[in-house]
Image 1 (tube, protein in one colour):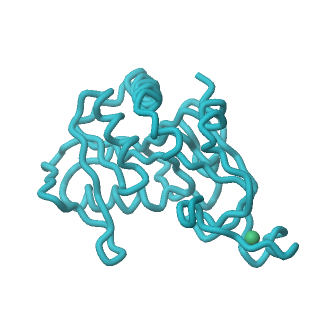
Image 2 (cartoon, rainbow, N blue to C red; image 1 turned 180 degrees about the horizontal axis):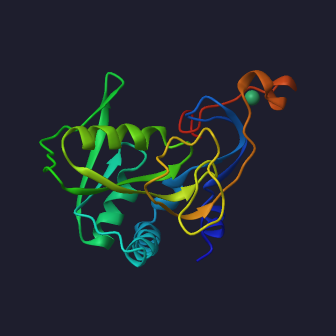
Length: 202
Ligand code: ZN
C-alpha cells in the first residue's frame, strides 16, 4: 500500500510554512483528517495497521486515542482489531480519561494516533492509562513523522522521540520532512510567517 500516494491524492500532504505541535517549523504538514474524510480509506488504512500489529503477535483489549487528532484512527483500528475503543482528551490542558470510560487493572491497551511526531500526546495518554492500572502494550499511528523508530525498520529513534524503546511502535510509513527550531527557521528568516495547520482553513 502506497500511503504517501494516498496522502498526496487526498491533498493531505501540505506544503507551506507550518508550526508543528512541537513548536518547531516545517515546510510540510500531514493533515490526516483529509485522508480520513473518506471512511473507506480510514477503514483500509486501519486494517493494514491491524494486520502488522497482529503479525507481530501483539494482543490488545482496547485501543486508546488522544483526542482530537487520534480519534478516527483509533476508532478504526479498534474496529479492525476487534477491541474496545476509548479516548483521552485535554481538560484545561491536562489529558484525562472522561465520559465514563474506564480501564481495568491489567487491561492491554494500544495507544493510537493519526500521526506520531515525537509522541508527546501519545505518551501523555499512555501515562494516564498506566496510572489507572492498565498496561500499554504498543503504540500505533497511520503515519510516522520520522522521529521515532517504526516497528520492522532499521531506523533509529531521534533523541526527541518520547516513545519508550521497550514497546513497539507500529505505523504504515515514514514521512521525513525538514524541521527547524523557530529561531533557526530559514523560511522565517526569509520573512515568511508560519501558520498553525488546522486553523484558518489550513
Ligand atoms: Zn518558520
